[in-house]
Image (tube, rainbow, N blue to C red; front, side, top):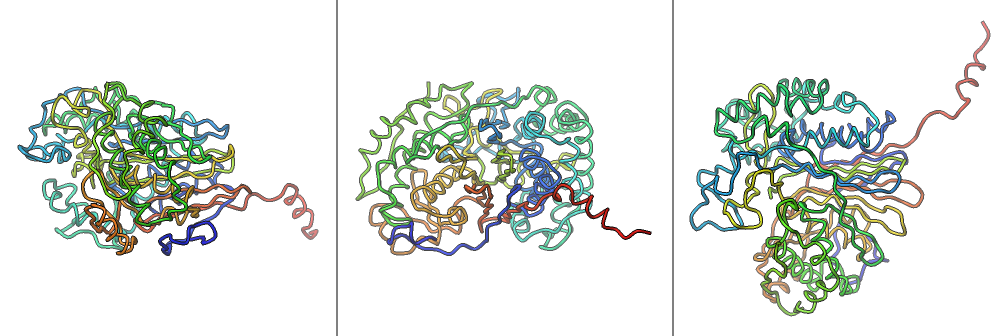
Amino acid sequence: MNDTSIARNSVHFATEKQPATGSRGMATSNHPLASAAGAEMLAAGGNAIDAAVAMQFTLTVVEPMMIGLIGGGTAHIRTADGNHVVIDGMSAVPGKGHATMYNPVPNGAPENYETIDRANVLGPSSVATPGSLKAWCLALETFGSMPLADVMEPAIRHASRGFRVTPYLHDCITTAAPDFALDKLISDRYMPGGIALKPGERLVQGDYADALRLIAQEGASALHGGALGAAVDAHMAANGGYVSLADLTGYEPRLRQPIRTNYRGWEIIGPPPPAASGIHIAQMLAILEGFDLKALGFGTADTCHLVAEVLRIAFADRAAGTGDPDFLKVPVERITSRAYAAERRAKIDMARSQKWGAGVMAGEGANTTHLTAADSMGNVVASTQTINNLFGARYIVPGTGMIPNNYMHNFDPRPGVALSIEPGKRVTTSMSPMMGIKDGKIRFALGLPGGKKIFPSAMQAILNIVDHGMSLQEAVEAPRIWTEGVALEVERGIPETVRDALAARGHDVQVVPTVAGGMNGIGFGDDGNLTGAACWRADGTPVGVSGGLARAGVRFVLESAKPKA
């Protein structure tokens, strides 16, 4: 941490990873092979969109527990001309879905969306209409510069030839193992002989490589109408699923305008509804702007208390008023207004925690992945993708190698509330591919996985940069806290003295290994250099591209210097 810009009373910590730098491009993701795929596109003359799409396909191979073709996601793109657009590829309720399609567990916790027999969590009955593949292809067609087959080549290579299992993937397999027993295909792949693949073992996915080759030839239509879609449709029909071929062919990603807010001279830009992140990060920053967080210091009891209180406020309003804008009138202006922030701020008590109710009325899974890419032309992509829970619905569609999402678990199985099930309704997400602008120039782009903990963690990273003067590497690795109203989760990097002080103010403090997942991002220097950063919470790896082609005329000089025969 930079002591010259951070308050003396701040909590100090050591970063575990090193940043990467590059002048011609940067690719950072939560797996080194995916980051290498992005860097390969940049080195070949592609742009940031080409790199991001290559990383997304590669992550479906090397992080199969987090991301897949039958998934959903949100991509925030800044083009070289300075325009921003968000591609909404979030999963949606199938046409056969309805408000009472599941049976809620009697007396279950309302916020957990539990249903009898876990029907909205496991197997075909938990799958929502996917949007990932169509969204990736739309991004490439609209903003990319390379053919689909070229950006898919690294993914096909790693699926067909295999790659080494990391300890992180091994741990995820072990966690999901009890449910793998319900599906022979997924069990045989990740637990051959009943034993989870060990770190260092090679994972080959030949059937999935064939599926990727078909997509490289036919595009998104291979799944959204072609042979892969027919396989999904047939398996759903035979096993109690709801997604049909009509759902797959009818789905379309949306191009949306982002949410923008100003915070201490910075412009912070993020996704709009159905994402909850942009509006609630803007809301929390507006409330916190009334406090001198720099003077209070990073990780102190006062700062942690304030962050916890604004999180409680945001989650109360999220539950009441945030959802798919096609089905719900989301009060964006009210939630993000300075006047509303002043109302909420005035009720914060620095001496004690409070239970907050919603101040507005309306008119997800923790296992995700994130990538960030930038090129030397000014294109930037921050993209968060998921199949919801670890390994999604925890089965493989026969003959395809594809693991579907279990996004139906993110809808409330009770009728008559903001997140009730309706055909075509898109999932509300906490995905937070965020970007920060200062003096008209982009300064950072970042994001992370982590379900409901994503946007609170992204907001804390923004505070780390803007208020606490941290470098990007420090900002993504700094200790985090989280609450949505009850327990206050605190990472071990927050000292015991601070935890005790928070408990004295009425917080139910619980120490946890991690809050949310591996954050990664890119910082932009005045000299045009890029800095990539990834944190210790995942296999995050930044890969920078520098150097370039030979100076003009060099080849002629070398040829003319050859000795005469």
